Length: 477
Image (cartoon, rainbow, N blue to C red; front, side, top):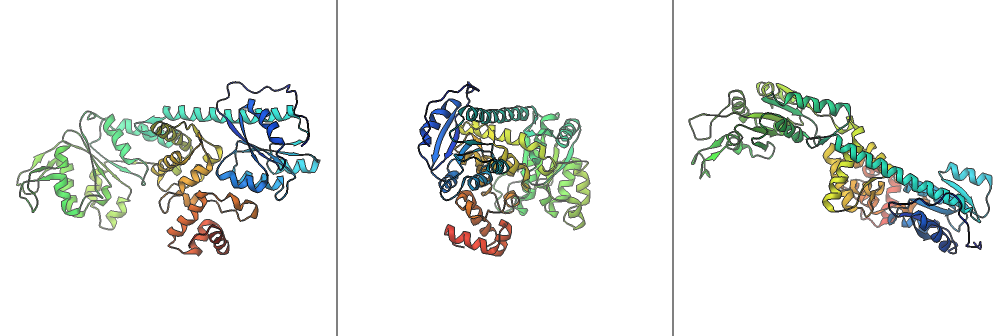
């Protein structure tokens, strides 16, 4: 490019008070454009990075995620349209402007159809380029404002550690307010990770016993032979190893609330004694002939279908009906996807504060990824993914790439399987394979115990394509 570097910018002016530096990637085989564009873009709040060709630009997307890109149409190797299409796939939020010295109507139309923000001819119309950069910055500001609104709304819709604006969650919160002052026993049912303990703690905090103890026992973590001793206590010498008298959890929680987490795991042998403790407030320590009176509110939680457990003979119907005088069912995250932006805003705020990091939100593409995931682990899984993304990112706004990488660390069977998109087999985007995607292939292979046919199906590619990826990445499959 041999144009003069002097120009007059008439309208619009760069916006004042730019919140943060954005990244503008210039992709051109002529390095002479760099000083000119650096000087022009800086007042608009852009840090300019230069790539000399399409392959180099695509390969660097794992290191930098540009907010905008100026891509030359005619370059050796990949042309600008090919780079545009590949970048739109890899960075959906990036605003891409094509530029060329030989503009035609057909190429302009093709560029816009492929997703370009605009199409500029060389020599540049700097007033038009300035307008486009202002538009990109204004888009970023709008995104910042939306994230700030979500963060404020998340605070407004918090309820005793839970967050929910959806009708089902507002109904749940109303139920907790109504039930807490009056119920002695409540059964909380919900999938893993929906927040059963948070519901139990809210019931305690809203009830008349809020100033007394809230005692938790994880029924799935207690050895069956010690269950009776844990719940009801024992006398010294009652059995081998009972060197001291022990107060059970019912007595320990006297006057307060006892939370039986994973109540569906209760051994059948203990259920009759638990029923008596709940029904009559009487407990009997192991090795003692005496009964002791207790006054305890009991909240039981389970992710099992206790009616099915009764039919299978694994749970007593009389205990179920006593515990389930009031039954609360917590909705899954799949039933309240409209709450995901508020949950993520809350979690990002929490982890940014804890890590002393300036992370303010996420891109639209990242939000779409979260909305499309299946989340079998519910809110707990979402929270874990956001925490990992906050740890791994180097950006102030979480990107889709950050979340894919964080999802790659999810447990087998997690939402990352459901949200994975088929890996692009097009030769134009092979250099886009990030560390997260490499981790994705390795993790799926581990999950499938090395079964390549099953792994390929899960990844959305043919078995032959999987073998090509394994060879290209030097993965020992």
